[in-house]
Length: 316
Length: 297
Image (cartoon, rainbow over all chains, first blue to last red; front, top):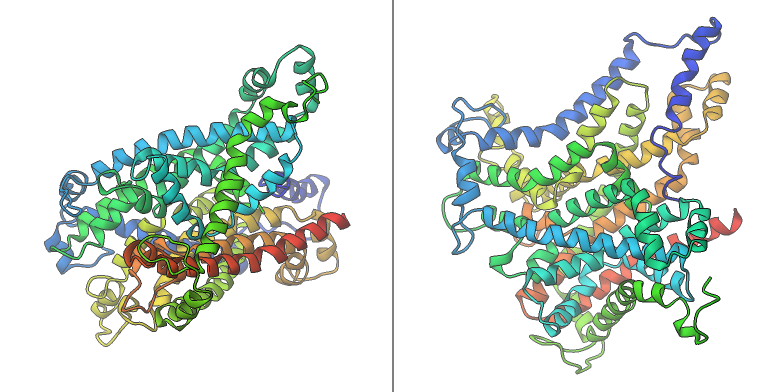
């Protein structure tokens, strides 16, 4: 259902080309409206109003982060800075305090990297193999486990967080980065497995059969035939997992200790700490720094990001 | 498939089974095992540590008589209904606007969807700043000459839900827009031709013909939005910390605070079990609906 439900462009050209075709054949029916008329103005007007709503917070973040505190106290949060300063950024990165640590968000950044990289690689490796086994090597009960997995994606995390604390404590990973990595692998599994299952089942089965006849085994087929031709779906999975894991807050705050907190948790602690003078410019610089990685991925990946979330979206 | 494998059935296709072990463990141990564990322990009087001393429904009785839980449920209901309606309405409106063969469609879509790439913590912190009474919106409107203007949702128990809505929709409506836009693009061109031939105005075609045809896409959106609503936690922590007072508490935060803050595990388990029950009440009918649809096709 996932691929069929998302023909972003597939149907669009058909409709877009219809009026053009008519122009070539000579006039028939209503002329295509190309010029500005009240309807077009309303369409663009509506879109522009919504765009302002969507862009305003980004604008405010950037502007505030470039101002000094005296200017913030006097002025207007929407106004651009009269005097640009990068000091808030420096301070957010290397000096902002969370609790007793005053080494800034850099600590959280490197923690987040140390969590996101292995968690992304592991979760995708596990899920890709799952999807492959589910499509090409079905065994008794495999579909049952898969159904449980998909249903599991809807169980509120709150129901499972405490028993997982116990499990992590038993295997000695509680509070460590690797414990959190394991949690991300587990909770990322439903969507990513679904993604790979759908992708692999869309490939022609002859491919698999031919490799079998050639004597390739379970891993041989996977590594030498399927993986090389699955680059797009791997990219989608990486985008999905990196943004998802980077943005996680709940698991980070539960399963890690203050010195290994991911960036989101540290950001929240910096901004919402009660003690001390509030430095809004530093807060906004910290917020932008935290959002920078997923935003970069979003703007670079474009269509693939949309494909990724859409694939994740139709998991029902 | 593994006809040449060893005779013992368990070892047939053993590599696939071995490779699927993480999935099997996740499904059985985490999704089923951990959930059941929490449900069972919600009937005990566990406090600092979990222990099997059953007290029947005592935790649930206490839960439902706790004002903070009542407020949490009420908030979730109000936020949930408003967020669902507004997200679907805005999502559909934006999808229709984007569907008008406009210029810069990609640009507009990029703008509408980018907050979805950001975490709820970032979202909450930004909106906290915009709604700051001394520097944000209120301050600016007052500065424009409306000195009596008051809009301080972060410190007004009655309006705080509006702050959560503004931030939540800002972050999430783009996803609904994109999914609905894909649904619109999936509608057969002939439908539009037929409507045009019959002289039905565009807006009527959208509302009375296209909208009913998109039921399955809307169902997907509803499930997605609802799943997000029940999990609502990070945004509240970052934007309001449950305040002012307990005015913006939500169930997920109740669970976390009782489990890890107040060291009252039993309450946390009971509250999370209630959340599970709520999700099942949404998921099971949807799954049956999907199953029925597949059977009919």
